[in-house]
Length: 308
Length: 246
Image (cartoon, rainbow over all chains, first blue to last red; front, side):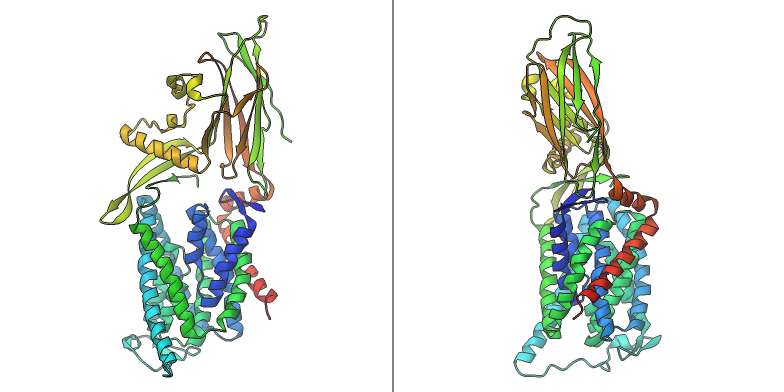
């Protein structure tokens, strides 16, 4: 069944859209990531113009993350205090990212920066997570009880000034690293068209030592607020949010996210992190190959100026 | 159905005129829009007041041109192992859609000069007067190829059928990614390689109803549109949670 997308100005199969929304929503519920880093390339590959894909996916990420965030909220898995700091600095970062986006697009090097950005970010985060989760999985297998990182295990980050008490996370840390993480994710997220959950989750776990029980919920809450703001920014700046496309993806995404969250409860934290690490690495390798391998077509074309 | 248009244009020399018709004067984009089939038909008639019958064989070429855009064609090159866009050529007022239907091979119908001067070949639009013409020629060929791969450009050399000696019809399927806007269909009648009659007809591709409302709102009330998108997303997410709650 074909449905015409009024902003993308083409017609696509309804079931295909709901289907990829559902598949990515499942992963987003499972890992607590927005899923934008999978959905955006998928849509562009299906023929949706890149600006429309990026902008509409932000809307879908809001929906997919909302159902996840709510179910975590009911189970008390969100540190709202911490999320607030992350969101406020994240929105500030998003303004910077949107401005940089426009600069790069005018220079014609947006594709390169997006590919490099995905490669570097996904590659480094993926490798780090894979190493950590493999180590903890091996320990578990050899019978050693993997010691959970305790909140009172301090690193240099915990020695910084301006400390704030985050009750839910049982943390008493400086707000500076929290704000920096928010700022960075806001910037990178709006530049690359992703929610940034896959950076947020490891950053909270490894840098701030946020306990595992609130990490995913807090990350999802931050993604909802930040991507909501980014959707509005995209709608105002480029008018490329296709509400019909976003809605089709949302319907699939929210359903998928529920099943993903249920499946996530069957798996241990280190297993989840290992799987997510593999997924992230796969996407990173794909972007890396696209930079290095001889492209199928060295020529490309785009509409410039007023028309989309 | 569409409103039918009927008009005729007089050709001075050969005493022939073209009476033609287009099946649609507007193509309406609805939610289930998946392209549309257009039919062009017409007849080659003797001039008004002329008593002698027109004698073929004739050839008919229909050129359909969509709304223009500014386009850029880019080329990637390998720099230290990494493929980067390094060269680009911009084309002003480049058609977003270009299809040629003809009753035979274009090179058999007439010579290349006539084809080029009347912009019957898509390459005619890539001859940018400014800049490096060699670059624009190379990139122009590639741009036409890319547009053809997207189904937006094309040449169908058996697209026009003669039902009798003077009466032809042609069908064109407009793809769903053909952008909305004003379109022009130019019909040329050839005899012995010369244009003996020509006519241009316009039709519009436009969004109607809900699709039009959405597209207009996105441009006219972007802030409100964005807020509605976010509310819709939050609501869908919440509803999903309620429906699937176990």
